[in-house]
Length: 259
Image (cartoon, rainbow, N blue to C red; front, side, top):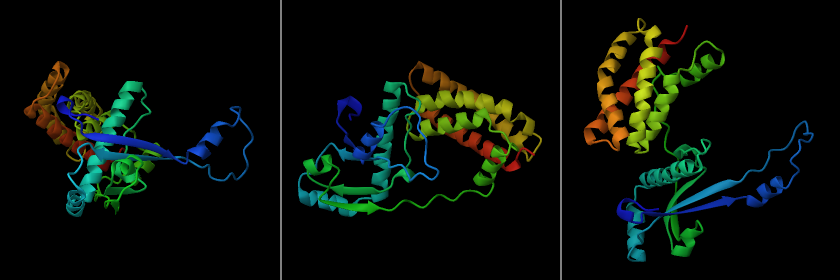
C-alpha cells in the first residue's frame, strides 16, 4: 500500500485459517437438503490480517527498543485504520455494498510485534505483545441502546432515515474520507430537519433544530466544496462540528422516545 507521492507505507498480508473445513462445505451439493433437528455448529474460517510497516528497522536492537516503547493500543488502532482503508477501496473496486469495514472490538486477538521478513509475511514474529481489548466507552444513560432496540423491534419507535445517514457520515469522517462525510452529512441534515420536526415541542428539541438550521449554510458550503474536489480545514471543521451537533440532537430525540 502506498501513500502520498507513491511512498510505500504498509504491506498487507491476508490469510484464511481453517480453509480445509470451508472447502469441504463448498463441495456439498447446492440443492436444499433436510437439516438435523439439532445440528452441530458449522465450522467457519477465520481471517488473519497482518499489517507490516514498509520501512524496516536498521537493526534488531532498534526493533526491540521500538517494541519496548510502543503504545500497543495505538498501534492496533492504526493497523485497523489501514485495513479499513483497504476494505473501503475493495468495496469501491467491486461495487459490493456487502464489503464492510471492521471494528477493533471484532478482533478475536490483536498482537503487536517484530520479526524478520519471512516471519511477518506468514503472520509470525520474533517477539510480540498480545494486546487486550480496550474497555468499552461509557455511554450516557440517555442513549439506552438496549431499550431503544426493544422499542424499535416492538414497533413503539421508528428508525429515522437521518439516523442511518448520520451513522454513515460518522464512519466516513472517522476514516478520514472528508469529501464523502460532507456529502453524506448534507443529506442527513436535510432529512433530520424534517424528520425531527414532530418532536420539536418536546424536551427542548426546537432549540436543537434551530441550532442545526444555523449550521446548514456551513454544511452546504462543505458539500459544495466536496463536489468540486476537496475540503479546506475550515470546511472539514464545519463538517465535524455539525455532525457532532446532529448526533446530539438524535440522542436527545432518542431519550424522549416515540410514545
